[in-house]
Image (cartoon, rainbow, N blue to C red):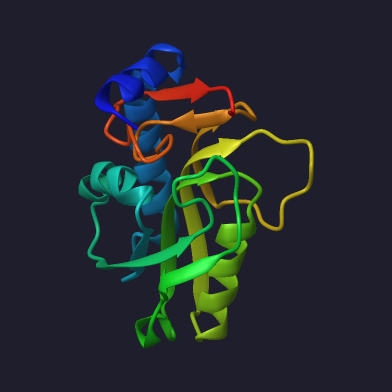
Length: 181
């Protein structure tokens, strides 16, 4: 994709969540997370690459000590449809006997977060919680419900705030939607 094609894609998209709404949602999530686990010393795991922006916005708002690391399980790569799951960086032994908070950009069908939770629990975590910036509204049942959700988004392809469209526009402060192509 060329620079011009990336801008064309942006022009064809529509804003579904404003930057102000994203910021307010993250503030509220930080308060809820603090109320739930602020007295513990949790391990926070960010799911790369989509959760990088969300993580960077959320962590400074958490007012308790925590240990931080990352994991990488992907289904999308640069496509618009989920595929086979691939662990690039799996959680390690540091989850054993810990409260683990997993941060991700979006919960779509829930398969990726369920696989992450199952792996963390199998490694002996005391408790595994999940926080997602966005959750897609879907009528189908999901294998898990996130513990903390920033905003709900329509069942369309969304990008911005760490989520990409064909590898681009993770850096947008808003959440936008584009038709699947």
